[in-house]
Image 1 (tube, rainbow, N blue to C red):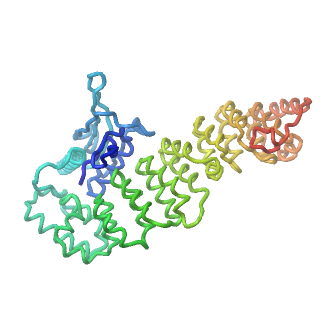
Image 2 (image 1 turned 30 degrees about the horizontal axis):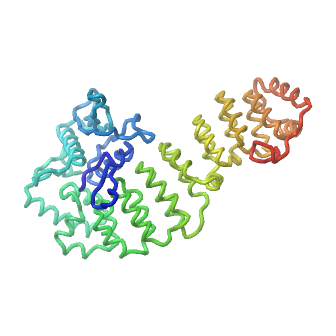
Image 3 (image 1 turned 90 degrees about the vertical axis):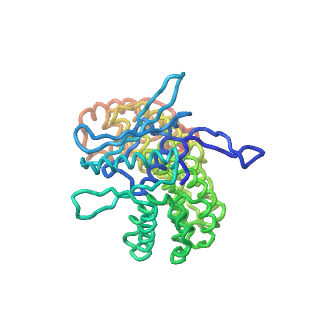
Length: 464
């Protein structure tokens, strides 16, 4: 397999055969590609494999950085694998933790396995030099410990032939078989090309999926036109395939296919979010209007919501910038509520400025902000035009219950009727401070003031 790159390359103008530096990849994108590769080989630590939090939210890999691993027993339990980034700033070395993996086992075989995973990571970034035999863990037998065996090339060939036959006959063992094949050959599709006869027993769709998972772009290019009726399934596969090759496969499929179902396309967008590749997600969302079998106005907003709630805020913010006001207005109402509950002021303002509609979530937004003593933020969103229905008395109730008279006065300023609210709230619970806040609002309500015209209202053009 090709090595995982830490930087981006693009064709050189005037000579597409050459490439030039085009910036650094995000840490999330690199992590997802590495995790995908290790998982496909059956080489993920059994307890966890996590990226350090400081590399989240779209942070890029430093230019000139290199990767190295350390492996050792933990101080209390298990064996740990630590992946570090090292680069230079002002001629001084900087080393930062990037990824941590852990296995609960503490035997010598467990430590050996973690060293093998470390080796797989090193090869993923620096290449697999030489033509020496690889290691294979034989698993899940009744022995007290896993066994690590070293296979000669001839022995590898014997095992590979048996595994391929097993893959054809025992569907339930397919996943584990594929992992073993990748660990020993690097690529299932490359091996099938070599032996020739056995691929004839597989469907074209299965071959295409294997090419995607192996990252074999040329094989994918030759195979996907043979299964045009599986375009939806293939889009989901390529969109969720981390790395540059997955991005290129996605672009190729988008250019070749006529239409995709909205449900499959949304799933593909979510899979793309999980890769951490913001550019891929933006491309999918941008092309949706041209590629869907039927219109899905809420799709961009649903992708933004998924990215935001799945820990990919930088991708969500990139999409908000890209989307039109019409697309933001069609987003799920809970998107604005999520931003408010997280006290993400800039994202909330960006959504309101682009016409986000809170709908029935308006009361929850004001309740969350005033309950966290962030009345200034609630007032700012209302002043920027966050719409609230004129009979949404639950919104006013939230402000009064949380003793936020300033926010409540804004609702009254734009047409919400205090007398009707009193009738609505008569039998609802009234906690400490409720009566005092109502007294202040009653005094404010009795003051002479001009009611704004609907078209002058900063709250979405509604007469509240």
